[in-house]
Image 1 (cartoon, rainbow, N blue to C red):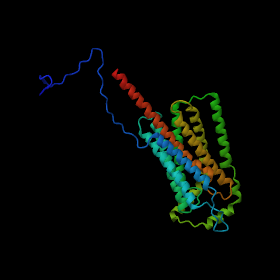
Image 2: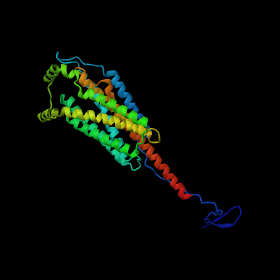
Image 3: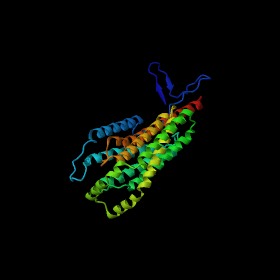
Image 4: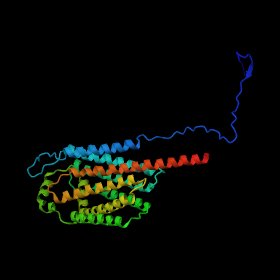
Length: 347
C-alpha cells in the first residue's frame, strides 16, 4: 500500500518497523487485564451491618423489654406482648443465619490461613443454633408449650459440640505456649466458671421450691394447639431435663475456658482481631446462658425477653464479624504473596 506525501512529493511505502531497544534495557511488559470477581458485599459493609444490627437489637431490648401485658386470668402473671417475643426471635434468627453463612464462606475458601475445618465446625454450629431457635419458637409461640426440653435443645446440644470442636481445632493449630501468668488467668477463669455453674445448675433454686402450685395452675390454664404426637414427644423429652441441664453446665464452662485460651493465644499478630471476636462471641453466649439459668431458677414467674438476653444476639454477630475479618486478612495476605511471586519471576 502506498500513499503520497503532498509536501515533499515523494512516495513512501507504509510498513511497520519494530522499535529497537538498546542492549541491557528490559522490554516493557504489557499490562495484563486480570478480571477478579469482587464480592457483592465488602468486608467493611458486612462489619458495619453487623454493628448496626447489634445497636438496633440493643435499642429494641432497652425500649420494650419492660413492657408487660396485664394477665387475662387472675392466677396468671403479666406477660410480655407477642410482638415483642417475635421481634426478639427475629433478631436472633437473622444474626445466627448470617453468621453461619459467613463462617461457611470461609470454609469454602482455600485461602483461609487458620484452616477450613475450623470454620466448617463453627458454621455448622451456628446453623444448628438457628434451627434450634426456630424449633423453640414453634414450641413456645406457635404451639403454646412450655417445655423443659424441646427438639430445639437437641440442635442446641449439637451446636455446642460443633462450636467447641471448631475452637479446639483453632487452639491446636496455634500451638499454644502460654506463660505462667496466662495459665494463672486461665485457671482463675475456669474456677469462677465452674463455681457459677455449680451454683446455678446443681444448687436448688428458690423459684423451683416455692412456685410449684403456680406452675401447675398456669400449665392447666394454657391450652396448647400442638398435635398429639408433638405433645407426646414433649412429655418424653422432659424426662431428660436434668441430664441436658448438666450438659449445658459442662458445655458452658468448657466453651468459656476454650474462649479464654483463644484470647490469650491469639493476643497480638495479624490474625488476632478475628479470634478476639470469636472469644468475645463465646463470652456473650456464656453471659446469656448464665443469666437465663439464674432467672429460670431463682426468679418467680420469669418471662423470657429480659435485657441481658440481648447477648444471644451479640454472640452470632461477633462470630460473623470474626469470620469477615479472617476472610479479609487471609485474602489480602495471599494476594500480596501472588504479586511478590510475579514480580520475582519477571525480575
